[in-house]
Image (cartoon, rainbow, N blue to C red):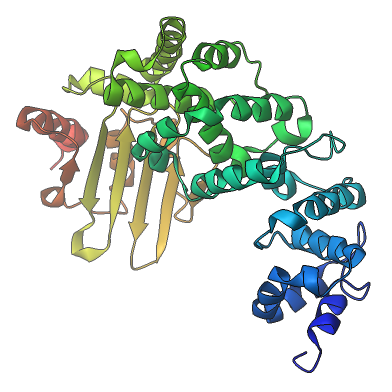
Length: 388
């Protein structure tokens, strides 16, 4: 392709030979882009000087289809928006959430309102910087560590709520979307939570279930956000109108925490652990370096426990999580969930015939008091104490 001129290269890129129509295979286009992305990136910056307007619209449609990033000039922005409308028209029936989550936020419309005015170039530039930063966060923990950033960006709260309300109108955004939209919509929620003008409005609608785009797990996550805001900035971070909703949200989550297996476990053992923000892990080696068993416990009502037993000579394991359908039982063992967290020692006892536990190797983390560690050890070994 190096022998092609810049014009020929770009024209081939947007030709029928590569650019698919609705329901057509786009693998040839993706393959070509992966081989020549560097040249394409260089030429896309000056494409307006190489292609005519019709060809430029087609090129921008390819950019949208590939979800590749290019630098837009102010004078070409309106052409790009026209290309986006054309892209929505051509592929609207086969688009998924991943295709439009970023364009909706950046340009202000999607296939459900394609004739909307959209944003100016100045608005787009501001939103692009915000979205790039939001995109850099890959976990809830990342949000919790960067509260100051969301506090500084609270001026975008009104627009964030407009996006949430728009998405909540359509099943397209609300069904099975958490893996794709989860962190993005939670970031929008944080922008609203930090803005005094919109805190109460957002929380009231959220608690009433008006935002269909939020799945049920988001009650827990927004509770974590509110608790972190209170911890970091004090009660005054919320207005008098918003504070009762914050208390309601936290109490709803506390009810779930108190009903969790780990809360019942720590209560029965009499451990000095708070209602929230704690985690305890137990590690027991198998004798002769044959593997280990590991139990992780935490206050989180969703991510409540995780158990794993690994047998190194067989290179096989048993693993089960409370929070997901993730379940691995290569060792054909009794299900841990049938015993529950408090029944962990009894579960270990059923395995004793096949696996030898090294009780001298037990490692406990997350408990500060020696008395609590002693209580936990007594609980662990209690089923084995009367054996020869």
